[in-house]
Image 1 (tube, helix red, strand yellow):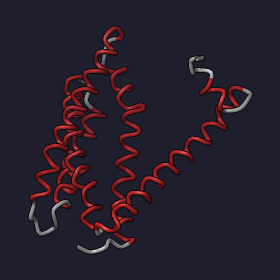
Image 2 (cartoon, rainbow, N blue to C red):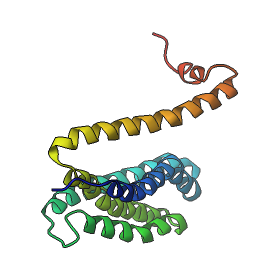
Image 3 (tube, rainbow, N blue to C red):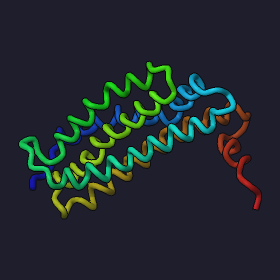
Length: 183
């Protein structure tokens, strides 16, 4: 086992950044916009629930399938990289199908297969870091990743608080605390 160099982390980030941006866009706006466009007004809630539930089920199944399979893989590219390549490339037609298809059930199928293939790539990619980092450094790596993730959340939270302060005319915290129940 070798220690991963900085270039390895940069290459992984090149995959993770678009992956996270894609899912942020899908889960905050994409699904709702497609359902709004395709489902009748009285069925939008059920349609969104159906789309989300089927996608989540395939996401879970894909990771349960890919994780153990990648642990046993003996491909010349390594245990994880074939899943990253196949999952990412195979997801592309379903990404475009999700955006362009005009039939709700075809959109559900394309979203489910998009979930399947992207999570087929994601599960082994998450396991790639422990493969590259010696066990004695794993705890430190996880701490650094957690701190980095938390700092990104905070950096996103402060501008949001500033904007909400401008909207509410007071401290940004008021926007959030007004909605909390009084104890």
